[in-house]
Length: 407
Image (cartoon, rainbow, N blue to C red; front, side, top):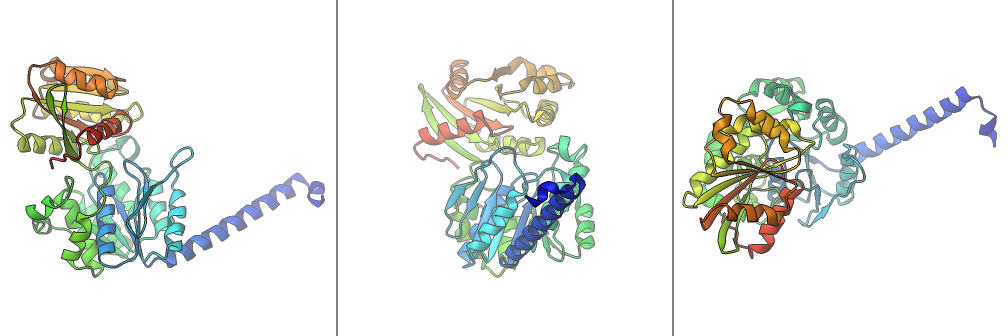
């Protein structure tokens, strides 16, 4: 063949030119797919991204817009314009190039809107996701809290700077973040976009009665943000809410399930998705106030060996929280949590009732909870991470509660 007679340097040049041509063609195809989707909403933040993505998509669908969505949270899912869902299967590690396939699929489905959750943690990749892959018309920031500090840190302000990478160019940006508002205002101005604040008055406008219509525990802040996006796109508030109430919740959404286990009543609260200290404490405090009549309280912290900074953050913070009757560490890499806790001044107030259940299965965990006390009614709250044993616990309570969701 003719190429066998080429010099190595020429051969490499031919390969490089061919690769460049392929990349240019792929970039043109991607831009063409993006142009077919007039509304593109990029959702980012520390907590609540998946929920807000689902809420916006459901509200727009109810308003008559043909809408696709993609979540990246607890389980990566693609949501079709009719609301049906399918898992996104991955080979190997997560790669932001996945967003290219999602855009192409949404375009093939003739979607008028695509609501897509940011799937990157690396600051540079977050910006690339926005500027090259999504090129959103609308951006949403749920919040900016201290999490993934090993990637976006070291400080909370650094997290805000990283999240600002998904501000759209010449688009509209929705946020309610106050503490680091200047960072986001600067990014919005730099990219010639329009800022849309969700104020406390907007959050309070979401009534308790409206929240009660959800089949799971949803936060007013999430609903207020989703409503702001939907109404800005011409969907009536009441119609958008109707759609949101009927939407399928994310598997990581906070929910409570009560079961009978060996003669004991266990109310389990799935708060595993609240895995930064601020969100976790807020959730824990709220559940204690909502369910004051249980005999014992148990906090389950699901640790992950690949999320050591998260475990250390919780370990340093937990001594200042209202304390449970029992604190049980499950999952893997629990030593990081214990070491961080031991370094705090109030460690001795927590260590006496701290137990290690690393590697325990669901039955062993529940046996431990009910066998340590003569009490009959137990409030059990899971935080930290949902992966692994966390998701197994969620599935167990879902299957054994016979649909008894107490939210």
